[in-house]
Image 1 (tube, chains in turn orange, purple):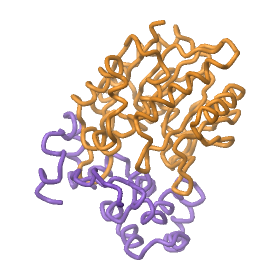
Image 2: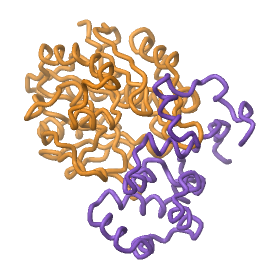
Image 3: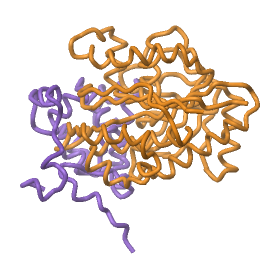
Image 4: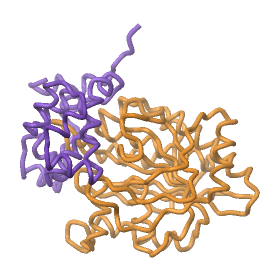
Amino acid sequence: MARITAGVGCSHVPAIGVAMDQGITEDDYWKPVFAGFEKSREWMKEAKPDVIILVYNDHCTAFDSSIIPTFALGCAAEFQPADEGWGPRPVPVVKNHQVMASHIAQSLILDEFDITIMNEMDVDHGLTVPLSVMYNQPTEWPALVIPLAVNVVMYPAPTGNRCYNLGKAIRRAVESFDEDLNVVIFGTGGMSHQLQYKRAGLINPEWDKDFLDRLTSDPVGLSQMPHVEYMREAGSEGVEMVMWHVMRGALDDEVTEVHRHYHVPASNTAVGHIILENKS
Amino acid sequence: MAINKDYEDIPGTFVFDADRARIGYHLNQFCISLSKAENRDAFKTDPEAHMAKFPMSEEQSQAVRDRDWNRMLELCGNIYYTSKLAAFDGINFQQLAGLMTGMGDSYREMMVNGGRPIAGNRYKHEWKED
């Protein structure tokens, strides 16, 4: 049977991808951002996931305003890095576990999560930056990746509660898949940041730290946080953090925090990262 | 009964909700078109002809011509879309934030020093403007 063994929370700041692609990660500005991922890359080598379920948001790349699915599961054989206006990132093609993805799609819909199925989709920095920070620059991604895109661009994003419960449904779907697979789930985006208008640049490290703490100590309570609190306290784009609840919901109630990294700034954003392992 | 927009008292912020998405639709679709190379070429060759493919309001079109980044947001543009027009002009996210906040280069300095603090920036009544 397939099992989810751990969860990774991770920001996806596009400038982090640019810094890696341009080879400037040792610069004074970027060094502390990447230093916090050294342990994570070692951890990935130990954890060796066969499959990563990567919960992320698309930035009007695969989905412009014409179609806005709340949850969209990638079911194609592979996903090309997208051209987001400055050419595609020079990173490997993302390969799916297509049989498992279609199993998860069927399981989720029967579990009353009416997801959209994507049989053609390019993936943007929201998906590729977390892979880059966790795996560095391999010629092929070491794991198969099942993308789950969540709308957080047009308000409202799904509620934290809905995301948490989707995580539980994903776990049920994974555990009903016969192949013996080690699955790690990523929840991405955040942390506090606002990219727009006159309040751009908002950063709230106390709020971010409390969010990271409560992923372990109070995940259910944390999932009940209303949208307005994210937007007010962590910036309008901080609402992306709802995606971390999908990751958290897919884990055991009791988890062990094995790594944390927090740094301000990367471009406009607070970078947050956590690794949680199931206790069982 | 109307939906309670409990997020409208956040200062210096537009929440891109269903109403704003509706009003900003053509402006945003114009902006996002620039993530494709052929559309960037078309816009470069004949800006007005490319803009005319998208039935924006005259105010929205003028904000695009003026590269008035805040006006585009006021007219229901969304930052993930308007940033594509900025990228077309060679302006990155951080430079764009410098323009939107009126801080210019000091924006980057603020970020390096930890960003804009939350204290005094939660509610519109804490700001003299808005």
